[in-house]
Length: 342
Ligand SMILES: Nc1nc2c(ncn2[C@@H]2O[C@H](COP(=O)(O)OP(=O)(O)O)[C@@H](O)[C@H]2O)c(=O)[nH]1
Ligand SMILES: [Mg+2]
Image (cartoon, rainbow, N blue to C red; front, side, top):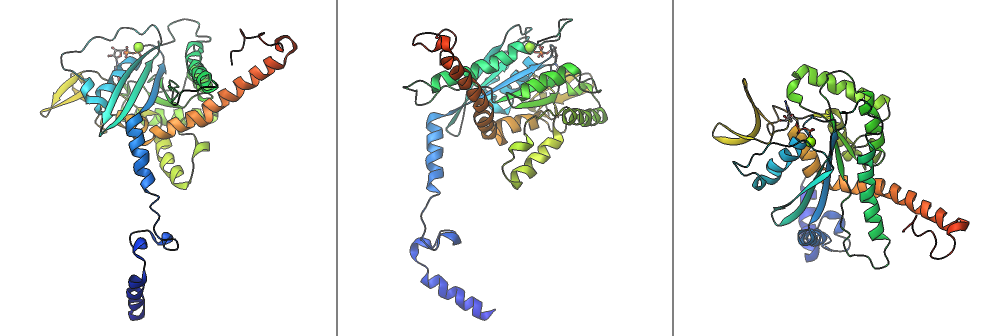
């Protein structure tokens, strides 16, 4: 005991001043202060702000438009909620986006949620995913066009969909072929976060069993939803994401009305037997969805969108335009501009 204590004292005396506050590994070179870069990154982000785009997809009547309002009215952006301004949500007939700039502790986030018309109204649902896939690809295309310009903007406006919340109807059975096919297609081009819609219509046991079946279904059909196992970066990441994967799809409830509960105003659905509070983790898993999207995995959703989904779109498009440029018909300058503007 004693010798080591003495050695420690000695070391303390000899340690150069610059190393005093640095971690042990820095002692060799003295304290460099690399962590100051964190402050610089923070200041930069605060100045420029960032964009984050979510899309809701699913059959008509599952509460997608309500969920868009729930997201904005929940703690993400309390100020968007003004009492007495409740209006009925009309049926969504086209892809439309709502943007709010949310500022918290000096950091600005431009959150856009894109609402889509529900499908499933027709007897024949063939290709009902086309408008949605088209919208997602159009945003990649927009970004690509800005990126390949010789004089590019310093910051390219980002309208790419970073997370696509897919609403599964609360049937309590298995996934329907339509949902399987839709998610299969979507998961190849975007981060898909499936949720069980209107979870208040299922009992707790039904929710748990349905969740299990959906997980099995996704596995059997090799549908890789977010957070994708392939993209876990390290064991810590894997551990955290494994816990999330167990809970996916989140059983959510949406509401855009506020009610008084124990003297506090809460977002919820009023029923004869009580109020279902959407932000109460004991009532539903909306808080898990919101936290995954807006808090814990926001940057990761953006990174995967850029590095994986956008990247494969970019490779595909540039290959296509190269092929078009090389083909004899388009080889002459000025030709083929109509088909490829890249
Ligand atoms: N029980 C229940 N009803 C909901 C929920 N979310 C929305 N609704 C209701 O379902 C109906 C359709 O909602 P809407 O948001 O227009 O669905 P969309 O067609 O998917 O956009 C409305 O009457 C909503 O009030 C929910 O979580 N639970
Ligand atoms: Mg709608």
